Length: 286
Image (tube, rainbow, N blue to C red):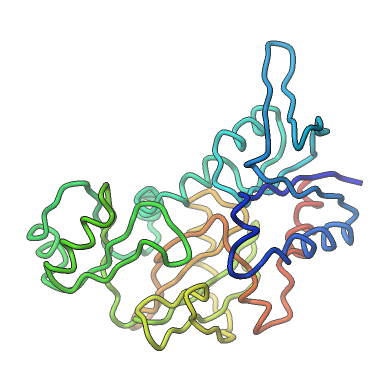
């Protein structure tokens, strides 16, 4: 029987959806002849000397796993595991690529994957940005963030000034795709396969995130959805991810790539079991 860890940040326990995914993960793993432990990075101590590396957790020394699923953007822990030759899903580099919106967009452009026009800076310069987006409203974001947090629609200079003060650091600006206002697609990719997708809709916001109160509908996969989603995952280097696609008049464009995507939404509109698919894939990979 293979043995693995799933590493979460401790604040996962207190999120609005609760922690029921922990047992879901354990049960799905066991059905694939895999035993897993849930590890909270906040309680993990890593000891290093010239002879060996040890992981201490809640006062006990842990046995090294065959693999680790990172549900936490903790690069030091992830890199330590990789340095020991342990398979990490997703890899340290790919998680960094997906966490930083500017880096994600750069990689999409480099690999000829459609994404809205963007810029990033720390400078306060509304006139330049306003002109860059041809006088149209645009989206302003923190460089890191998920679940729709740190994302603002900028319609005028007043919006920009207040958002600039709130972010108080480097920020990312993205072309606003009016055709997709209040709706997008979340596509789930695992390895070289697209598992499925859902349409996310908001009646009250330009952001359609389910975590912000949006609703979800079943949406049929098409070849174009599969192609752009697989290309985006490959460009960023992720094995398991959520690709957020915006609708354009004739196709799709990649808004963001999430290396730590939640998967409850797709279970509400389909019989796709993401944890089961994940552990099947891990077993084959090992």
